[in-house]
Length: 506
Image: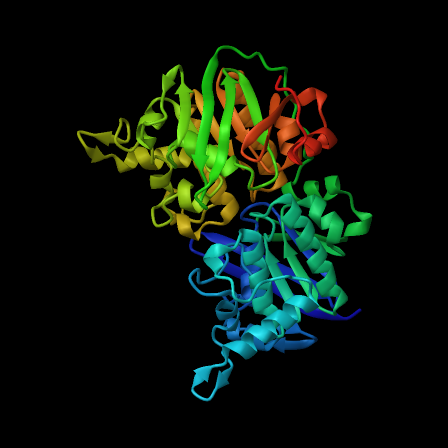
């Protein structure tokens, strides 16, 4: 058995936490090896050590049987190791080609030979079926295409061992399917793939082996074809996980959130939402599903005040909030778990405790006579960290930027659910979360429904929409094309509506 990578007894400490505790990872050449674990289990830290971003406190690394010291990413690149990070490392006003060749620019005399570089990028893109336009600017392409640029960056540098850190966390279902195909093609060309993910279905689809970590320790490595999703989930969280949401039938009351004839412009300056109407009642969850790019983002931004509307009304408790600011909507009882946690959910340079009171810092008990009460803010953080199992090295004092993406998401969910507003817009609430955290968040959302709150759930995960929602509204081309009883529909019917089939609104 030929191991292309061996990480032996790796230990890594950060202030207040042991991220990796004597972990051994052995990866066969020409395979897809998954690394599975809860948020904060140490997966990204381990791979960052392999890529040279961190140095281990103890342990050794072998590449192709030879012990190596990977002191920085340049050393890793020289050993044929590349990494696609969960949050991409791209210069947004550069072209695809400029990003890929950055640091390795081919020259013609004293100037960069852009034509040769673009030709090489196109050649690699065609070889691996990536279909990337080398002349596009990063700011003009979608997240899925940006990820392909990151893959091209690795391949341009002749990487043979490719690390993907939570690669599907921000992708649509269609983009995930395409990425899985790309991974298989890479392995078919002789590459080795290390895949960090929480998604058991993806592991079953593409991985050969799976190594499971829990709280920084190795639980075991199993052959994927011989191991069930339930067994891997149990290894990951240390208990049996319920994959389906148990909930009593909804008891809807009065309409709390009503949207009437809404028109909203998208980023391209055309209507992304057209004459859209919907209503969410107290004590129910209305799920919004559709193929990404059909108006979900514009709808969310319009309701929460992040974008102006062209026409229509947004009624919260019977009061039109269409022209109100974000603060007024929050104070009127609107909650928001945003789909982009970095842009709209957190202030990354603030401490975790400060982010957890971002809506309430000026009110008691967090402020007295205009002066912040840091003791109260800290106690609030301690309570939410424990209640929602937010993994962070320094408790409430942890810099939010230093936390894993999944734990940042848990922090946002904790803050918004703890406020318990009368209406909530919940967008991609479990993006980047492990199965144990997903189970808990779903229970909390349903508990809010059962306490009489109105919840608008927007998700690209059909399983989540079907499991959690009471009614499902399908959006296509910026319009609602059907509203269905979640208990009486399935993925096939939803898929037809998502593709544009019409159905009478129920």
